[in-house]
Length: 261
Image (cartoon, rainbow, N blue to C red; front, side, top):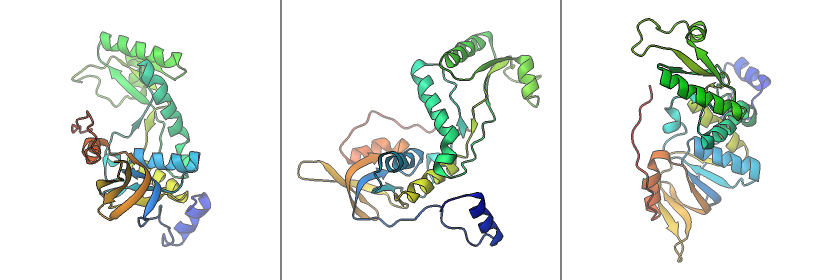
């Protein structure tokens, strides 16, 4: 389904009875060129880029739950490129530019809102650190503004400046930063990938790997049967070590629960 003002109006005027599925709920085929384990943001984005940029469309994304049920459905929603380390600065700025055009690329409203991101500082040392970070950003062509207390109070007057546990002294502002609707991001990638022929397969948990006589991985065992694959990719976040162990790989990664409020 191609979204436009006309398709939205038609669906609305029908009493919301003619909406089509956002993506195809595919039945697994016997074999794919690429199988991606994990239907979160990384897995679905990988599938979409394979199909849109490299023409590899015989791809399946396997999700043990439903799209948006994992980490992608519960994160801080913040998008930004206000990092100070040289390796991070360019990486996250590229990411920021992808966010800025993503809704047009995917033909999906991910509710990207570039309302700005402010990191508050509460001490002279923290101010100096943010000044260095802002300088690094500007050197790399990224927008950054170091605000004093008066500027912060003018921009966000509803904060408690009088009785804050950590008194606010100022902040580092990136106006291009903002938020995105996290689950809409994965829905958008699922929509766009499905439109290009990628199979989105939900409720399909990977339980093992299929190997040939030489030990090469040639497919996966799943709760919905065996699926052959030319290549297998893993994008399973905190389950990476557990899934990799099924293939005989030991990853030096530990998963720790982090709750973002």
